[in-house]
Structure formats: C-alpha cells, structure tokens
Length: 252
Ligand code: 13P
Image 1 (cartoon, rainbow, N blue to C red):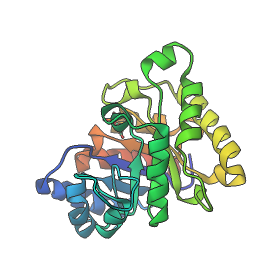
Image 2 (cartoon, rainbow, N blue to C red):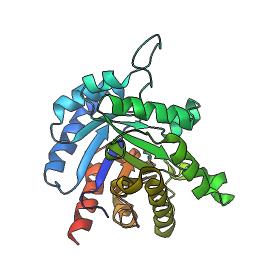
Image 3 (spheres, rainbow, N blue to C red):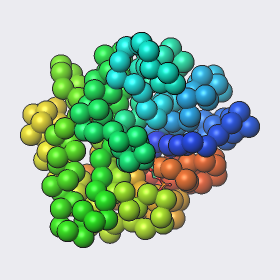
Image 4 (cartoon, protein in one colour):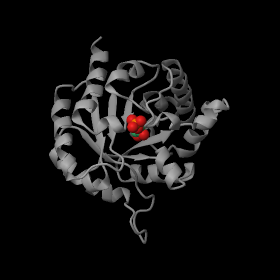
C-alpha cells in the first residue's frame, strides 16, 4: 500500500442536511487516523455545508461540466465547485458513463476543466462483466485511461485513478486480490507510458463493494493506494471502519 492511503466516500445521490451529522462524525474520527487521507464527495447540494462542518477531511464533487460557464441548464462548472469549497471532483464514474452517455473524451474534458481551476481529479475507469468474461478487461481499461486522463503540465500531480469494475459496484461481489493486483499493475504501466516518471506517484484506488470486513484484504493488493467507497461511506460507523482498516494495515 502507498505511504498515505486515500479513502474517498462517494455519497452518490444520497444525503440531505440531516446527513451532515455523519460527515461531522467522519471528520472527528479521521482525526484519530491521520495516517490515512480521508475525503467525502457528497451531492452538489451538500458540498458547502460539508466543507463548513468537516474541517479536516477533503471534500469534493461527483461530476462537473467541462465548460467554464454558459447556457447549460442544470449543470455545474468546475469553478462553481471550487467556489463552494470543493477540493477535487470525481469524473468518469461508470454510473455517469452509463446514465449520461459520457465518453472518454467527455471525461478528459471534465478532468482538464477541473485542473484548470485548481481542483484535483479522480478519474474512474473499469470494465463491465461482459468485458471481463470476454478477456478484454485490461484492454478496455487501457483504452479508458488513454482517452480519459487529462494532459498538460503537472497534470499527473493532480490526478488520482479509481479502478471500479462495473460488476462489483453495489453488488457485494469483488474481484480476487490477485485480479485487483494484476489490473492495478497494468494501470501503473499505462500511467508510466502516459505521464513518464510522474506516473509512478499517482495513487490508484480500488472501488466496488469495499466494506469494513474486506477493506484490509483489498487494500493489501499490489499497487492499491486506497479505496473509492459507495454504500459503506454513508454512515460514519462503516466508513470509519474502512479508514481504520487502512490505518491498521499501515501499522502492521
Ligand atoms: P459501492 O461501494 O456501493 O459498491 O460503490 C462503489 C462506487 O461506485 C464508488 O464510486
């Protein structure tokens, strides 16, 4: 595992102000587990309040529009996210790729828009079950990386990659530790090819059915630098269980 693992909670379309108490509890719990970098990506409507309630952890968004502004009803620009207190944005999540038809080129444009205003970007990639069954998982992920990663000076320093096999999201199923390690090593090679020596420092998160019970095992796979957590990030109890597992793995 990386020196300082990064554990990010993606609240997806969950959360009203009543959930700020969970964010506060996560923030307080993270204070005891400082060897781990902790962050939450609540829905847009809670970013500002989460930033105010939680002073220690990172706070980010789940998507942004690639344009600086304009006639895009209902969309949110990277600059607006920054203004509301976000420090990063998740782009290219498989749910956005599926629900909104986002292409690799769209994802890249969003990531570059984020970097341009000083946000970090978590770029998501991952194969479907059909891709894996057809033996195409690594090829699909390599293509997504080539098409989705932002270019430009010092881009590598602001990027995190999240590998989330689509079939493992919200299903309770996970790849084996060997499969995760093999994919993360393949991603590392691709990052080195794309970014040269800067590729070595990019953290690669695993996401898909991470829970307190399996976190230590999954985080122990080769080249895993942390986790992107959906369902288990919605309560402080389960999310801090994952953070604690990462913390303990570092001490072991
Ligand atoms: P689950 O942890 O609910 O499987 O979701 C993973 C995910 O999609 C995080 O972005």
